[in-house]
Length: 135
Image 1 (spheres, one colour):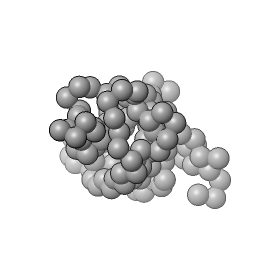
Image 2 (tube, helix red, strand yellow; image 1 turned 180 degrees about the vertical axis):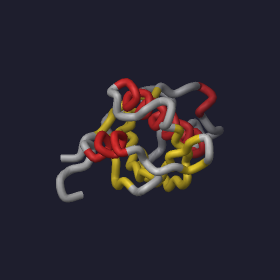
Image 3 (cartoon, rainbow, N blue to C red; image 1 turned 90 degrees about the horizontal axis):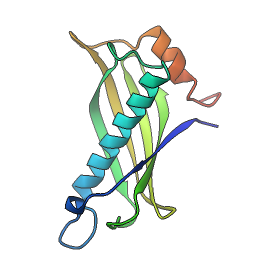
Image 4 (cartoon, one colour; image 1 turned 135 degrees about the vertical axis):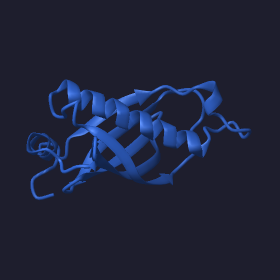
């Protein structure tokens, strides 16, 4: 089974649109917050070196499954889809009240002072521990 990181992201009054739903652009912000919390947890576990692990968003695809309403926090699961030479593909699943509200995939590029950099071997080993055998 693939390992996932789970975080509850609280909603804010300003996340709403005039229809009383959380605005689609705010969903992108919730996804960003989940990646930030994932990175902080990865650093705390010793999986990513904070001096090397700047992650730059390269792409993001979001599928909106149902409206998110102001109220219960949104639970977002983050998992690794694949690991490249300089990048990482992540999957995100967002739930509210136990129901899937959105899912997304993103690609983040590892960056250093000179721009994109290869993933460090120690980081790669830790990242690979998130993948199921055969993935």
